[in-house]
Length: 169
Image (cartoon, rainbow, N blue to C red):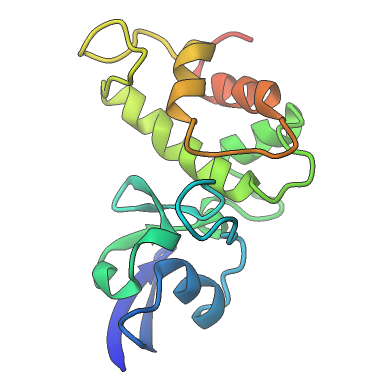
Protein backbone atom coordinates (compact mmCIF):
# COMPACT_ATOMS: atom_id res chain seq x y z
CA UNK A 1 0.00 0.00 0.00
CA UNK A 2 1.13 3.49 -0.81
CA UNK A 3 0.28 6.59 1.19
CA UNK A 4 -0.51 9.65 -0.89
CA UNK A 5 -1.53 13.11 0.27
CA UNK A 6 -4.16 14.49 -2.10
CA UNK A 7 -5.40 18.05 -1.95
CA UNK A 8 -8.90 17.89 -3.41
CA UNK A 9 -11.17 20.92 -3.57
CA UNK A 10 -9.04 22.69 -0.97
CA UNK A 11 -9.10 19.84 1.54
CA UNK A 12 -6.22 17.52 2.35
CA UNK A 13 -6.87 13.79 2.15
CA UNK A 14 -4.53 11.00 3.22
CA UNK A 15 -5.03 8.13 0.80
CA UNK A 16 -3.76 4.66 1.59
CA UNK A 17 -4.17 2.63 -1.58
CA UNK A 18 -2.38 0.42 -4.05
CA UNK A 19 -0.01 2.42 -6.25
CA UNK A 20 -2.00 1.25 -9.29
CA UNK A 21 -5.20 3.05 -8.24
CA UNK A 22 -6.20 5.66 -10.79
CA UNK A 23 -7.02 9.18 -9.72
CA UNK A 24 -10.59 8.55 -10.88
CA UNK A 25 -11.00 5.49 -8.67
CA UNK A 26 -9.34 7.27 -5.73
CA UNK A 27 -11.79 10.17 -6.02
CA UNK A 28 -14.88 8.00 -6.43
CA UNK A 29 -14.15 4.91 -4.35
CA UNK A 30 -11.78 6.14 -1.65
CA UNK A 31 -12.87 9.76 -1.14
CA UNK A 32 -16.56 9.43 -1.99
CA UNK A 33 -16.48 12.22 -4.60
CA UNK A 34 -18.81 10.63 -7.13
CA UNK A 35 -19.42 13.72 -9.27
CA UNK A 36 -16.51 12.69 -11.49
CA UNK A 37 -17.86 9.96 -13.76
CA UNK A 38 -16.31 6.81 -15.16
CA UNK A 39 -17.29 6.66 -18.82
CA UNK A 40 -15.00 4.70 -21.09
CA UNK A 41 -12.09 4.21 -18.65
CA UNK A 42 -9.74 4.66 -21.65
CA UNK A 43 -9.38 8.46 -21.84
CA UNK A 44 -11.61 8.78 -24.87
CA UNK A 45 -14.84 10.34 -23.56
CA UNK A 46 -13.83 13.02 -21.03
CA UNK A 47 -16.50 12.12 -18.45
CA UNK A 48 -13.74 11.82 -15.84
CA UNK A 49 -12.15 15.24 -16.50
CA UNK A 50 -10.85 17.03 -13.43
CA UNK A 51 -8.53 20.02 -13.00
CA UNK A 52 -5.04 19.36 -11.62
CA UNK A 53 -2.80 22.33 -10.93
CA UNK A 54 -5.00 24.41 -13.26
CA UNK A 55 -4.89 21.97 -16.16
CA UNK A 56 -7.64 19.61 -17.24
CA UNK A 57 -6.83 15.92 -17.31
CA UNK A 58 -8.62 12.63 -17.76
CA UNK A 59 -8.48 11.19 -14.26
CA UNK A 60 -8.87 7.63 -15.58
CA UNK A 61 -5.46 7.86 -17.29
CA UNK A 62 -3.36 8.90 -14.31
CA UNK A 63 -2.45 7.25 -11.04
CA UNK A 64 -3.45 8.87 -7.76
CA UNK A 65 0.08 8.50 -6.38
CA UNK A 66 1.37 10.71 -9.22
CA UNK A 67 -0.56 13.66 -7.74
CA UNK A 68 0.86 13.67 -4.23
CA UNK A 69 0.63 17.32 -3.16
CA UNK A 70 -1.06 18.56 -6.35
CA UNK A 71 -4.17 20.74 -6.11
CA UNK A 72 -7.07 18.81 -7.64
CA UNK A 73 -10.46 20.35 -8.39
CA UNK A 74 -13.49 18.21 -9.13
CA UNK A 75 -17.02 19.26 -10.03
CA UNK A 76 -17.80 19.33 -6.30
CA UNK A 77 -15.11 21.98 -5.85
CA UNK A 78 -16.46 24.32 -8.52
CA UNK A 79 -19.84 24.95 -6.91
CA UNK A 80 -22.62 23.45 -4.89
CA UNK A 81 -26.41 23.67 -4.78
CA UNK A 82 -27.34 27.25 -4.00
CA UNK A 83 -23.87 28.49 -4.92
CA UNK A 84 -23.17 27.30 -8.47
CA UNK A 85 -20.14 28.39 -10.47
CA UNK A 86 -20.73 30.64 -13.48
CA UNK A 87 -20.39 27.69 -15.83
CA UNK A 88 -22.72 25.50 -13.82
CA UNK A 89 -25.32 28.28 -13.89
CA UNK A 90 -24.79 28.80 -17.62
CA UNK A 91 -25.23 25.07 -18.30
CA UNK A 92 -28.56 25.22 -16.47
CA UNK A 93 -29.64 28.43 -18.23
CA UNK A 94 -28.72 27.11 -21.70
CA UNK A 95 -29.93 23.55 -21.04
CA UNK A 96 -26.39 22.30 -21.71
CA UNK A 97 -27.17 18.74 -20.67
CA UNK A 98 -29.76 16.05 -21.15
CA UNK A 99 -28.92 12.86 -19.28
CA UNK A 100 -26.21 14.76 -17.37
CA UNK A 101 -23.65 11.97 -17.24
CA UNK A 102 -20.97 13.90 -19.14
CA UNK A 103 -21.81 17.25 -17.54
CA UNK A 104 -19.27 17.21 -14.65
CA UNK A 105 -16.44 16.48 -17.09
CA UNK A 106 -17.76 19.04 -19.57
CA UNK A 107 -17.89 21.75 -16.89
CA UNK A 108 -14.43 20.95 -15.47
CA UNK A 109 -12.97 20.90 -18.97
CA UNK A 110 -14.69 24.15 -19.95
CA UNK A 111 -13.54 25.87 -16.75
CA UNK A 112 -9.88 25.10 -17.50
CA UNK A 113 -10.35 25.69 -21.25
CA UNK A 114 -11.54 29.25 -20.69
CA UNK A 115 -8.42 29.92 -18.62
CA UNK A 116 -6.22 28.39 -21.35
CA UNK A 117 -7.78 30.71 -23.92
CA UNK A 118 -7.39 33.75 -21.63
CA UNK A 119 -3.70 32.83 -21.26
CA UNK A 120 -3.37 32.91 -25.06
CA UNK A 121 -2.89 29.19 -25.67
CA UNK A 122 -3.65 28.48 -29.33
CA UNK A 123 -5.71 25.54 -30.52
CA UNK A 124 -5.60 23.70 -33.82
CA UNK A 125 -8.10 26.18 -35.31
CA UNK A 126 -6.61 29.39 -33.84
CA UNK A 127 -5.75 32.01 -36.43
CA UNK A 128 -2.26 32.55 -35.01
CA UNK A 129 0.09 31.24 -32.33
CA UNK A 130 -0.87 34.02 -29.93
CA UNK A 131 -4.20 32.27 -29.36
CA UNK A 132 -7.69 33.37 -30.32
CA UNK A 133 -8.96 36.94 -30.19
CA UNK A 134 -12.31 35.45 -29.24
CA UNK A 135 -13.78 32.04 -28.58
CA UNK A 136 -15.81 31.35 -31.71
CA UNK A 137 -18.06 28.31 -31.94
CA UNK A 138 -15.33 26.58 -33.96
CA UNK A 139 -12.70 27.45 -31.36
CA UNK A 140 -14.86 26.21 -28.46
CA UNK A 141 -15.78 23.01 -30.31
CA UNK A 142 -12.13 22.26 -31.07
CA UNK A 143 -11.00 22.93 -27.53
CA UNK A 144 -13.81 20.79 -26.08
CA UNK A 145 -13.39 17.93 -28.57
CA UNK A 146 -12.07 15.59 -25.86
CA UNK A 147 -15.41 15.68 -24.06
CA UNK A 148 -18.15 13.64 -25.68
CA UNK A 149 -21.90 13.96 -25.12
CA UNK A 150 -23.98 11.00 -26.23
CA UNK A 151 -27.13 13.12 -26.03
CA UNK A 152 -25.66 15.66 -28.50
CA UNK A 153 -26.26 18.76 -26.37
CA UNK A 154 -23.26 20.40 -28.07
CA UNK A 155 -24.96 23.61 -29.30
CA UNK A 156 -26.24 24.33 -25.80
CA UNK A 157 -22.87 23.50 -24.26
CA UNK A 158 -21.16 25.90 -26.67
CA UNK A 159 -23.70 28.63 -25.84
CA UNK A 160 -23.10 28.16 -22.10
CA UNK A 161 -19.34 28.37 -22.54
CA UNK A 162 -19.63 31.38 -24.83
CA UNK A 163 -21.75 33.19 -22.22
CA UNK A 164 -19.18 32.66 -19.48
CA UNK A 165 -16.25 33.46 -21.78
CA UNK A 166 -17.90 36.81 -22.52
CA UNK A 167 -18.91 36.13 -26.11
CA UNK A 168 -22.31 37.09 -27.44
CA UNK A 169 -24.78 34.31 -28.24
